[in-house]
Length: 115
Image (cartoon, one colour):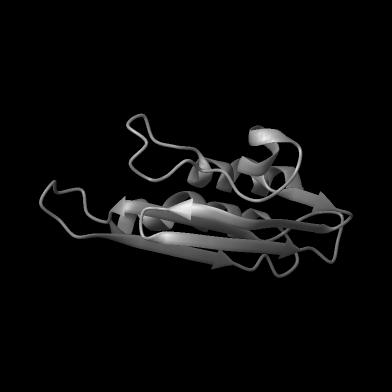
C-alpha cells in the first residue's frame, strides 16, 4: 500500500541527530510533521520541497492500483561500508510487475550488497 512506501521514504526527510541534512521540512501544509512526510490526494502522494545535504528535492508517486506493487528507496550519505569510502545518493526504483514480493525483496537487499 502507499502507506508502506511513505514509511520507507519518510526517513529520508527526517533531520539527522546533528541536523546535518537540513530541517527536513517542506512547503506542505499541516504542520512540520505533515510537511516531513508529504501529502496524499487519492492515489497520488507527493512532497513539494524537502531539504537534502546537497540542496532541495521533490518527489511524487502515482499508483494505478490499490495495492502498491512498486518500491523505491533513497540512501544518502556513505555509499561504502568503509569509513573512508565515497559519499553520495543512491536512488532505486523497482517495478513490481504483477506483485509486490520481488520489488520488496530487491528493495530490502540490493543496496546492502552494493555497499
